[in-house]
Length: 372
Image (cartoon, rainbow, N blue to C red):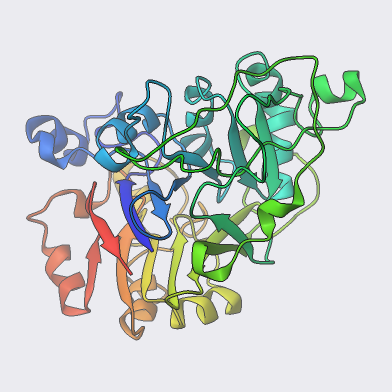
């Protein structure tokens, strides 16, 4: 399993366009301190296998351009990016899906409330259906295999997929048809730069094929298993009144590779440290978690809010209930991501870095690669 950190900032990035706090001012003076929105790319297997992006923010195109392994080629429209996995419905984790509209097909995995918010509140299905075919797949607590080799489930060159409206969207309700399932990983051999490739044909509105269940029938040696760890019912502001409370509004992602036994947990937003999360991180070789605020009073002290970090849905790093005390006891490598622009950790000379190092913890660096 290979992980590439694409971004490490909370909403707005660092610097935030309308902010002159010390963190933002420092990033403008020292460009190396700039941070893009928190995102992660994951690959199972060696060269020739495909990547999935966890959370697609406004910076997604720039993030892909900054990661050589994610660049298209050798053909003009061949990409190693297979799809997107969402941990929540926040704008800083989802706006990049629209930026990927040039894709000939895209798989987006999300929990049911997250998917419904994107389709019913942001109308993302209606907006993107004229541009590309999107298959919405449910992310659940049950492990699902991600293809490593890019098998197309038996489709041959020249077969075409219909770009149908997403489930629950206005277009789908008007059509009252059966949604089309797009291949999870794309054509055979569609891999990294330099690999042999076959491109999907453009969507054609007169053809429709049933979902191919063989996409889930992957051998353990060729896939990563992903599953959601429910964390909280924290909704984005645009969906504050959407549906009943559901702990899958915000989830952590568990990545497990049966062939090697490697396990990683990615949790960029933690409102509650649940028993399920605690169990998952104790068996993980790498844990990348919410580092939005250094301490609970930071939002109030910096003037960005009248609420504490915990009240805003983010457990702080330091303090009596801080996550650093929990992470210190873990056997795996632990890193922080999703830093707010007010977090002192944005300054590499801040004393807080030394305090983390004493506890065996670190801040994830942009473009860093972690191999498990």
